[in-house]
Image (tube, rainbow, N blue to C red; front, side, top):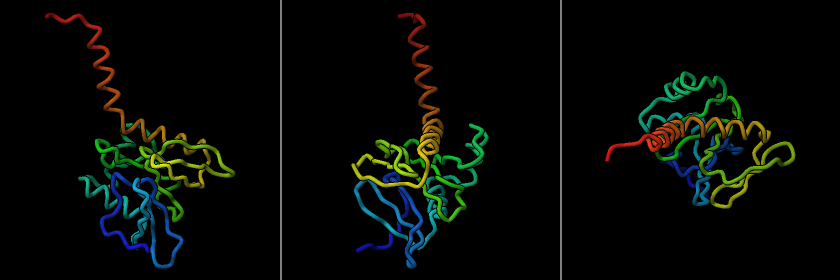
Length: 166
């Protein structure tokens, strides 16, 4: 039996979808294998998660656009320190938009007209998005999420090359 989730999406969320149910507007799956439902639309759940983590949805979108130049289907860095980021499969305003949380994606491969996604908990789900778009969106999300980590690693690599006084 499904119960409506009052908490919303978290860093444990793997995928957020529009519900094909007259009673609910959205459903999502977490890394523990639980299915959650809500009467709140997926985009509104994403906006709520952004606010709960200290930023507005529009502010996060604007930041990614400014820093990375991505204009459409912008990945959202809700809380990258907790690996809490996602990307939309379509325009976020589209009623059929699905939100993927790529940190929990183990693998993906072409499957008929879409992509078969295997999540880190072993669960599989077919997603109606071309594999090349899924791959590009994942790369963009990881690029945004780990930009700071990459900068730190580059600094450390360069720092170790410089002789230091003992």
